[in-house]
Image (cartoon, rainbow, N blue to C red; front, side, top):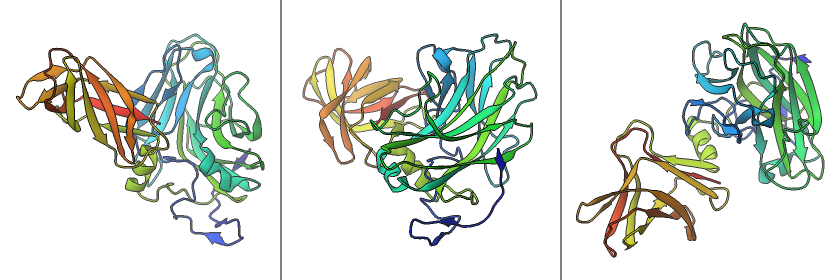
Length: 342
C-alpha cells in the first residue's frame, strides 16, 4: 500500500516534465466528480450496473441490490466541491461485494501502451464500514474496446493495492505498466462487506487520477476546466434538460411524418464517441405549428440522420397531423429531459 502527497512533475513519454495543472495529464475523465448529468443519487437495479457521476459506474456482485451511490458535498477535500459515496444501505444483510470504477477507451489508452502509469485517489470510509479493506487496481483489456472490468472474479489486475481505510481522507497510489497490446484500460475499486449494514457502511472516493509516470502529482481535471471536463463527459453521454426548467427545449426542430410519429433533430454540443446506441427521456411533449401538444409515448434513434453533432430522434405519440413542423419540449416538469449515450 502506498500513501503519497508527492508533488514531483509527471514525466512525458519523451522525458520532459508535465505541469501538474495541464489539461490532458489525467486519463480519468471527471476524476474530481464535478459533472453529474444523470442526477445526484442512484440505486443500481437487480440487473444493471449504474452510471453515476459522469464516466463512473458502480454496483454489486451478481447485481445485488441494497446499494446507493450519491453525490456528496459536506466534508469535501480542500479545493473540490463534490465527492462520490458508495453506500451499503442501512439494515442490508446481503454480503455480495461492491465495485466502482471507470473504463478508458481505446483512443485514450494507446498513448499509455508500454508506459508506466500511476493511479492516485483520495479515499475514506464511514464509521460503520464492514468491509475491512478496499482493493484498488489498474486493469487492461486486449480484445475489445469497451469491456475491461469483470464482475465475476474482478478481472485481471496489472497492479493493485489493498487499503485499510480510515474515516479521514488519505491519498493512495498504485503504479503499473500498460501492455503493448492494450486496447483499453480501467481503474477499479472493489470491497466485500459483512454482517448487517449500519448507517455509515460506505466508502467515499475523490480526485481520481491516472497519469504517466511512477509518481503521483497534484490532481488536475482531464479537461483542464469545468467546461473542458463537461465536454469530455459529453463525448460519451449528453442530456438536454438541466433539472431546473419545466419546459426545456430538447429538440428545436422536426416534422410530423404521420399521425403517430415525427422526426426531431437535436444538435449536441460536442461530437460523440460514436453513433449513440441508446436514448432515454422523461416528461416530453411534441408541439406543432398550430400549438397543439402531444405527449411523447416512446422514442428511438434515427440512425440514418447522424451527421457531425446532429442526430435525428423519432418521437411517437397519437393524433398528430402529418407535414407540420414541430419542436420537442419538457412537459411542465423539472424532471423533463432527453439523453443520448455513446
